[in-house]
Length: 375
Image (cartoon, rainbow, N blue to C red; front, side, top):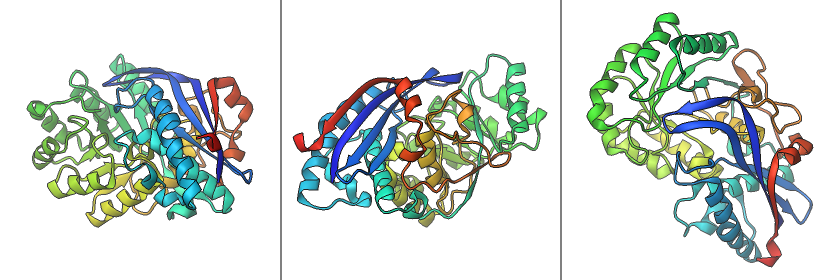
């Protein structure tokens, strides 16, 4: 049984600011969840909600509240009645609407605990098959074309297998065209973060001539219908990100032709169990798959790499080395390239032993320990 849950709020400086269509990030704010069993095992996971509700409706503050006051009480009551297993854990809070990132943090910590207790790697538990993962890089909107091209050149020298450029209606065709001209053979994609409207379709259609791998979430964060209309006109594959919150969303998107590719992020879907179900649906409908990132610490990256190992995850991931975003990660051994552009999937039997707890303490700005027997 779960004896306690420790919440930590972490503030970690980013190596460089990341500019997207919905803002600029200079600091990584994260919640770390630690589930302690009465047998002494520990499961750890990261909540990927951002400081402000600009990616989805969740934020660090709302996730903290939902976990403390809604998810943990349900977990405490449920484990008194039956033995819980990770793939069905979300059933105990099925009455809660939304709040997927909060749910994912607790659910993934439970998977991590299960991995430790059963001495089985997370990768093996969820059916992962790949040992090495191709890695791409996500580059934010740059202040000048010269700086952009230098950044792309450096990324390619470092071995990244794909360039993803954040775009907006104010900065799309010209920077993408500059990259394509300077690096004609590079694997290139664009991420719009919902920055466009359907009446701007002509602007998006112009991107067809740039031979992009995909355009990620061009239209509204909660839309599928307009994406289907756009995909019918667009030769380039649309990849849905923010619109996909569940396996059912993958099915709906596939049925109406809203995309050809889906970015599966465990935090956005509510955890590992829903990722597995979404993966099965995507394979059934022949939808391409890959796992994006949320500027995770090393804890979130280790869990993402297990997801990247699922069969059919064929596109390079955004889950890169620790030093891509952080001068100091919270792992004893930061995540590094095994060889240029490739990460090895670590066979973790629980990530707690990989964590540098002194560094975690240094970045902790708030901490709360909850005893489940009191709930």
